[in-house]
Length: 302
Image (cartoon, rainbow, N blue to C red; front, side):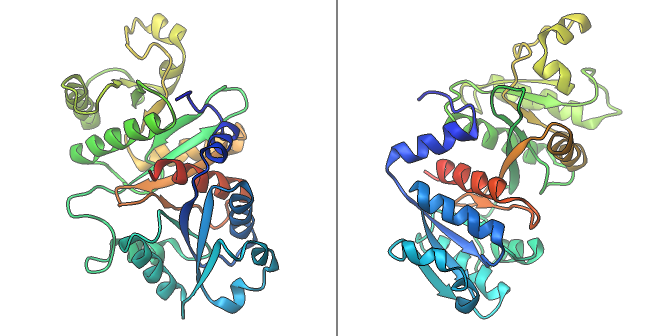
């Protein structure tokens, strides 16, 4: 498979596969979510299960054009909609779960419910973002900007494993994954750097498959071989990182907001650790971001 280096490549690839994924959308009431859903229908890679108030959903007459590929499932409230959408995943009727106009806490509560949710025992829930920046030339993946505040070693291991899998789905046969810190030095003052050494040992043992994992290193060193040379760092990543693992949510979220505002990045995000990818856009995300997130989740889902 040729590597997918842009969101345009992603949607073209999905169109060419001739395979539609079933996406359960919780409370698709806002225009941006609806626009993203309609675009996925038009591009032919998704069928929709719209879960919520039927009267509100039917206000958008555009869905009638795709009546054979859109199913409306009535729910009494947003909490009821989330629970019913999660049930569709559990029963195998949905390949992707997507958030519409519902509070994130309510959405996650249905996903994490110990009796009816979809987080498997022992699994780690984490968030992965794919970003497209005008001058970068290829997609950049990073984690975690939204879910895990301060990852434990086990959570970091899961994050790297998920990241390697996502990169391979995008056609990157040997992902180069950089473990990010403010410095390349190992120090007990920064316990995360000790975790990074253990993660590198796991990678060397083949735990993450065919992947290059190195760190700690700063973001510039991960993408610029000259910076590594100046610092005297001999890294197998060689300034060609495909993905970044951030030390905590504070760093990851700040990076996300920075590239969005200053670099005009387009982003697609999803949660992994559940049986199907979970799309978790912000309620304020534009239609493009929600559409690309849906597309990325459809690619990952099987």
